[in-house]
Length: 337
Image 1 (cartoon, rainbow, N blue to C red):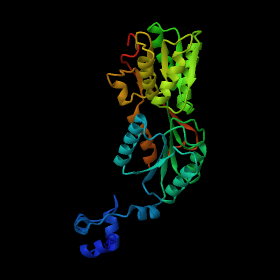
Image 2: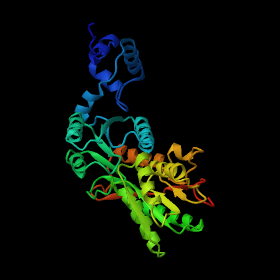
Image 3: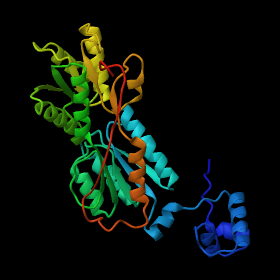
Image 4: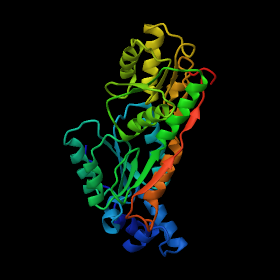
């Protein structure tokens, strides 16, 4: 089967009976072209199946409209919701998303990003704390606008969007105290991203201010199975916790299932549990998990607004940070909630 070449602007010009430059102006917002000429060009383009070659145009204007999403843990519910919100905002602003998976720690990430840069990607959004900081530096060296989500990179230039994790940790401690909890624990993974560690540090510090020691357990990746392992470690201690704050909802679901099914512990009567992210599963009746909802839509709007702005702000050479509030969602996994 012989594939037909793409229809060229010259073919559209010939069919419409106008110049090649008139076709270009007709497809350029704000360009000077009469309504009659624009209509003839559009009719010809529709008849021929013509589409503007944005890659070629990007080479001339130095703007391709491509934004790289540099992502890890693609399969997790929270990451999926964040990608969905950001890609929708990008599409609304006329941008195209190019996804780069950073779950592997070898050179494939660097190669993929360099390939995206070869396509003249205008900007990148790094959606997690896992990718190495050298990725950030590579984006900046190639003149990209850059948004960092839930990271602690301190290079000047990008917009950093973080959640106030420590403030959230302090609020959940208050909830545990009001429920009468005395033996506190924090369940975390070994991933060590800035946001996960900020929640842990915030919770431990807030408890220490009240003279309370927190038992901390970390294991594996930030997922359901790790939550089950952490629960087994915590719930076999001599001083078994009666409240566990989990670094995210997937860990919390694993902790809750292990507590109920392996140790026959009643939640929340004997054990209060809280998570973070407010994934869909948190609202299921089998979990009914008290958790924190990250402002996903606001994160997406702020990120794309920064990338789509015609000019960078005057302080673009400085470290620009935006700290957002996570809303506490009360459900049945804490007594009194």
